[in-house]
Length: 513
Image (cartoon, rainbow, N blue to C red; front, side, top):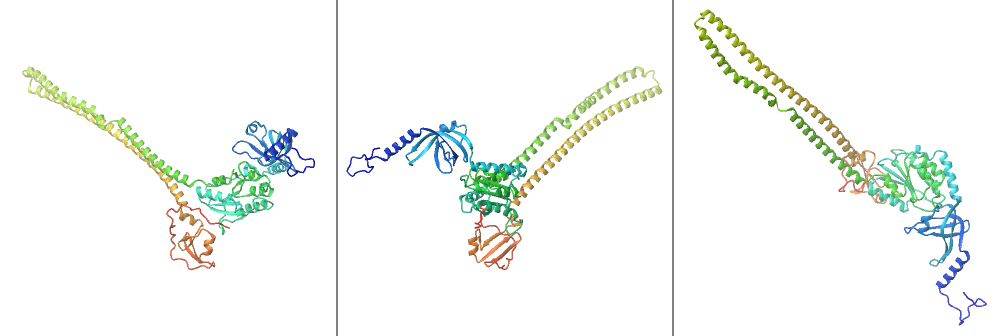
């Protein structure tokens, strides 16, 4: 770039008019030619990695800041990736960014040079508190499965509380108590510690319900913005909390000391709301599926026992089939008996005729008597054999019937026991459904506030109402705006909500501020 000797442009002279791009190009060439490749030592400031994969961060000391960028290909080759608070030595080349009239360092390698002052202080405090056992797993408490009241420690004017309330309303509406605090600055740590201890100091059954779960939340920020949650007073309050506590400070990559002392760490405030309550719709679907599976199991078990009974009955055989062989043998001998008797009579008659001439009446009488005895004996033997066969067949039939009856009794007892167990499971599910219902909620100490036929869900509506009606489990009480109790209503029967579905918006509540 050329100037006149006195460095003052002369009107009407032949001085060259530079464009902005020419000036930027000249500055770029001078800067890159003067410095070329450099190594810069400094503390890493805030790090940003957008979807493009490039990494943008700051290198700073106590007097100046240099913007630095690493392109996607260089980031993937880095053995050490810069993190906020680290002291590093960055190697690269200096250049300018004409779009914003600033210079920046294009970094291709990063070497650790030691932790920054803040990070060193943070690590020392972390080691000291861990040595006291404040981060021990033995102190961690299990989160309640479905808390009735949730305490939230955060700023009431930020987007964090709106995200938490919106997520709770979508999943399973719950009663929420908000303790407003400053989430950064000098008053942040005392406010947060006071809020945690204040929730723990609330007595059960007091004017305000005691929370069953505490969520400490704020949005993302730099390490300086989040420093209040690294203070010792906050960490000790979180570790001493008798109420289970979820820390949701910053975004997923942000870590503070309260995360180590809390019972559960959430990557975001929205994720903390998801950890706090289940999805009501999923529970309803699960109950329906469980009922369907229970009915299907009952039908399947009954059908299986019925089929088993039928199979065993076929294996035992029919009673008439057991008697048929003996009956057939008896019929066969009965058919042979008469011809045999006739044949024997004919043979005896022939012998008698031959001997008739020489037999005397006395001999004949003796002979007939002897033959008659033989006939009677043979007849008795046939009758005894028939009786034994019939008795044996009846005994076999009786044994078969006894076995069938015993098997049936066993099957009936087993089915009754299983049906009893299934009825008990159905009773328990029904008891759970009643416990989560409208009337049972009132019996646990809650109340519904109405102004006429309108539900009161905010302090503004309550302040504008002339009279308020408080509905409890055993009746209703009407009070005027000045707090004086009016005459209670005659009926003590709780009436149904005017909404079509009492479960919808059950967790909506007014602002406490």
